[in-house]
Length: 424
Image 1 (cartoon, rainbow, N blue to C red):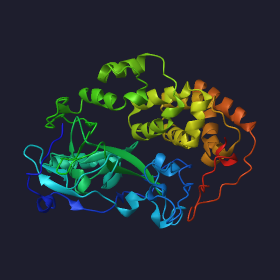
Image 2 (cartoon, one colour; image 1 turned 45 degrees about the horizontal axis):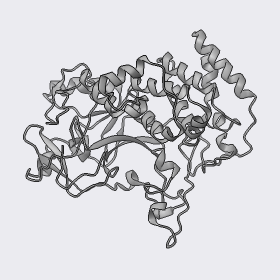
Image 3 (cartoon, rainbow, N blue to C red; image 1 turned 60 degrees about the horizontal axis):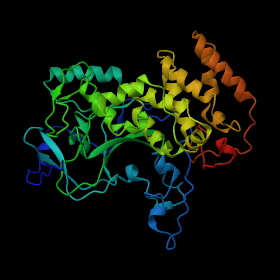
Image 4 (cartoon, rainbow, N blue to C red; image 1 turned 180 degrees about the vertical axis):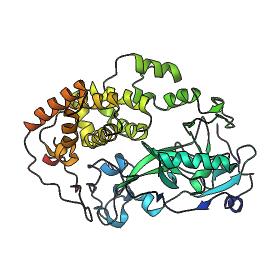
């Protein structure tokens, strides 16, 4: 349902009483927010010729830019499209024209001051990036101060953006069970950042909303005032699983158009995983990025990958999925945290990946983690790690040495190649 709120008063001045506006994230310490995917430092292969090519070929929508497809921004000074690059929206703060307004029941909100096209960049969600211990401490402090509305967003495991007292205009987007925007994770340089994007074409004066997919952190659920016909009633709780399942039907492998919500979710976790079709590769990469902090849904997607055929796996490899899974493995096998299910499904999946050489393995440095797993206590994981180490040791070394990206200190990153450097 389109909700036009052009009659609501603007409230930018009132908003300043509730928070301090900042332009970029503040990090509790510098290692927070870092991407673990070693494949995400390449320049793209776009070929834009000024005056001879349409502008969208400069890493724009529909250009097939490998960075844009995998939700990685091109870096200024490295992109072959140079100043014409259309894939530096976070860095250039190319935000939509929006107003902060005073709503009747939902406090302050956002509306579109001009029309938007599907997938347009609305605003970055910025704030203080903190670890879980600081998050919990702040929650207690906010409760003691009488602050009723928290503005937390999970960035990755045990890392959060807190925009409660310091943030950007994106913090004022309200929740809806049928939103016109979505939140997506992008890699910008070495860090993961969160952006709000148009889910569909949006009219001028529409309220801008996204689905919070709320983690309640032990607090009581809040009443939802979105007014949509599919309203879950509350923010948080089991009803949000239904909403999440509806959003991720494609990633779950649900083929029945009549299957929705919890029924779709139950089918996905109870039945055998559905192998991927090669045409799903782009969407699956997007889904993995968005589901990193949503373990049950992530496991379903990983299990689908583990039963997929070589042609689908090759498509995933071209979209840097090996490095993405390597980062997941690093996150889920540490000295203080081991998620056996996630680690096991990744190790089993890699047994069938059609790698032709050691390019991706060396680039990700994942063998070091496998050696640690092979020395661990879990016999199943030890066996799987040993099998992979033995198998990978027989592969040829890559004949192409990946150049370091400019100003890169440690990770070997450079221009993308679909030849020996990618292990294809």
